[in-house]
Image 1: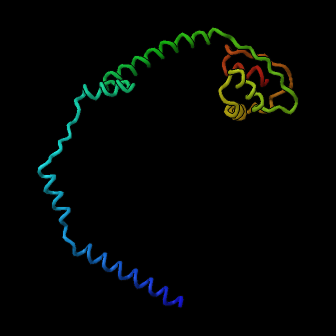
Image 2 (image 1 turned 180 degrees about the vertical axis):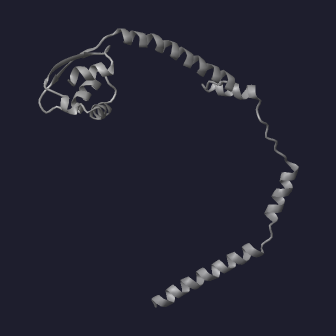
Image 3 (image 1 turned 60 degrees about the vertical axis):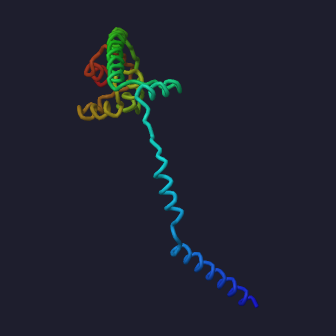
Length: 164
């Protein structure tokens, strides 16, 4: 009995699908033709707002509207003011002297000394400092002690003060 019920359902679905397909494929497209006819009598023209109208609408919503030339001028002015501000700051930094006392203990390496110098802004990179010491053959010249270096010393003077 279950088989008859399932077969009946499948047959019903098949017949329904066949009828819908036949109507779809053989049906007249009268609806599409009438739509075409009605769209022919009614025409919609999309009007693009002018530049001034668009600018006013955007400004009303809180946007800042600039031309490319205005934007480029602002960028150049900002860069120029940044450069003028950077020059006095660097001269003030050059006037400030940083003195660092380095206490080298047994077992410290050139990279340890480099880390101390990086934290004091004497050198930029501890690894590069260590590689330079190795390239100069000074890695075995590091002895325990207290060394004083300052920011006015050259790189070679700092190396000479620590690695004797």
